[in-house]
Image 1 (cartoon, rainbow, N blue to C red):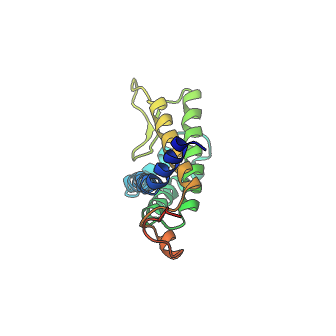
Image 2 (spheres, rainbow, N blue to C red; image 1 turned 90 degrees about the vertical axis):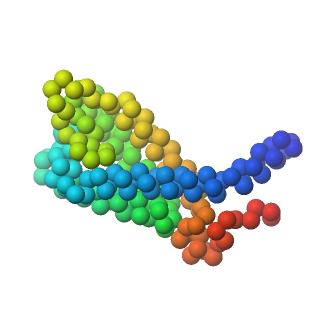
Image 3 (cartoon, one colour; image 1 turned 120 degrees about the horizontal axis):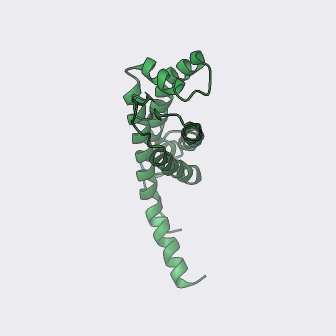
Length: 173
């Protein structure tokens, strides 16, 4: 291994915990904002899910009503750094479903708002949907979840505290 490669690895080892906490807290914020925006109006969340036209109305309403609580739970787990890998896995699965749903709506020519951060549902006549930015945004969040799947331990996390790890790992080994 070259000296340059060793330096890069050393820099990455030093930066990774801090990058990881930024990723964990960033993804936590996404879920807390998304869930918080929908929790006050569960019926609207159900209507937003129903707008995708991929399941019966009653099932869409139940999923729409449950979704904000799942998002809030994921946000809290990530905020605390508790069960981080599990929360990242569920986040990744949910984001794949969201991307598939948005892509499906786009492919079928539906004119809907994704409902990702509140409201959602059918768009007004003449209002153009913004599917590509929504898909790209969710793919970005999926990358964050993937990062946490690979490196779930971050500073100031309950996972680390329960494992008896210091807030910041000493990489001088």
